[in-house]
Image 1 (cartoon, helix red, strand yellow):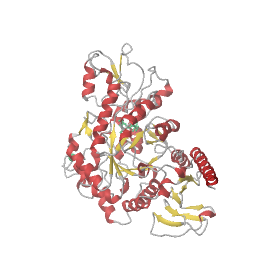
Image 2 (cartoon, protein in one colour; image 1 turned 45 degrees about the vertical axis):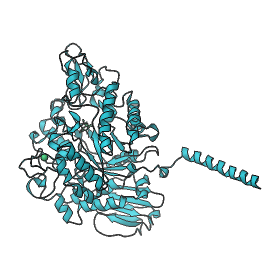
Image 3 (cartoon, rainbow, N blue to C red; image 1 turned 60 degrees about the vertical axis):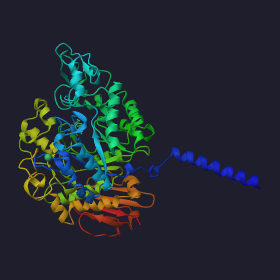
Image 4 (spheres, rainbow, N blue to C red; image 1 turned 120 degrees about the horizontal axis):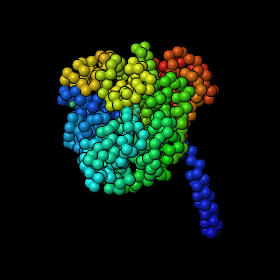
Length: 584
Ligand code: TEU
Ligand code: CA
């Protein structure tokens, strides 16, 4: 009897095991492994532009500290802080002079600790920006490296002799001109993919890698919750330093990114540093295709957790031109990044400090539709599959800045590329018109807090970059007071999303991918399905739905407080109307 039972038990256990292995091979997306960093909504702060505390016209850490309650009331989970390190600001902090020091204009290390603790006290995490593809030319390492060929730091950067009077090859810098600059007593050239003041670090050098691990530990030991990694796909340089062909010159990022040792470097960094902390990492995976990006974020590879894909955000972009784009084109790019396999987890974002304002690019920033379309974009952002990234000011519907002359810009990229763009056939007027659509400075104008002096950003009479003249209307105070504001709509959506596994982990399915005006998709969770219907146009649309959606309940929409149930298989959508439905 006992024996028989044992056999039965063995059979059960055995088949159980077998089922598990097949499951493992065919995991559906609903069986995604839960991780805290998959569930977060991250809010990006560009410190220079967020809040000035001392009247010098430059945002700073005490300014951010004074707004922690604001962030808390919005309901975000994580703050991503753009670089706060000591820097001569050739590229607003993306050129670091000392990785262990806080930029003087931003405050002190004590201020940083106060910020970190203040956020942690409210259950908000903090990730910082790790810029380790390049440093500032004013970094001690570079000063040493440049001083002579025999200096022990020489090999921390990439030096090559020129070809007669020319640089080593024809590679261009993203910020204009050659990617090589001659320096030091030996007349050699150093590599800089970005500005001259941003020399690329030589990751082939083991000592350099260890120094980077040390500085990562310095911040992790303070308690930061992870890193956003600047241009991380560029750290391993191609080993072939020949000239590029013309095609390569147009899009050099594809030559520069995903070098031969990238995976090895990331795995080593993970093993030596990241695996020892419970943190999140998100890499700026600029310059690759989907396949390559999926490799660095595949959980089986132990490299980084998440990556930003740029295809959807940059839809219609061709270098410095923003061309027309269609909704189906955009939806296909979103699908490609949202619908990835179960070993990867996507990110979703529509803007950041390098891109125009979301309502100006993806919505309609005219007075008639700015509020409605900003709310629609909030719904798009907060119902997608992936860790969500919001950019400061989008929660109040801030818009692009109306630039009328070149001296209003600050960005090194705009100035550096001026000659090249004019030489390639643009006129100053047409370049300015293009910049009005896509310049990075649109996202960097000061945060608009109130309708008082300089939008309440500073108590002083100047700001490092102009305040958008629309601040008397578009500001935080107005948003806080009006319960139908964009801010409160974000808040409600954040609340719906928080802890909602069906919405966070549910499969993504676009149900009308070729529809020219409507973006409609479902998020199919284990217990509930969500239906999102967004009319991304300024005309009314009749939209047909499958019968299976009958009985779904409207839980939030961007026009009124209605909560109705789907009774017909046709929805009549108002311009820029956005609706979120839930199954029973
Ligand atoms: O951005 C890299 C990058 O993709 C951009 O420079 C891009 O070429 C540009 O925005 C197109 O308009 C990262 C940072 O996000 C950016 O702010 C820095 O300037 C850059 O790296 C260098 O650190
Ligand atoms: Ca200041």
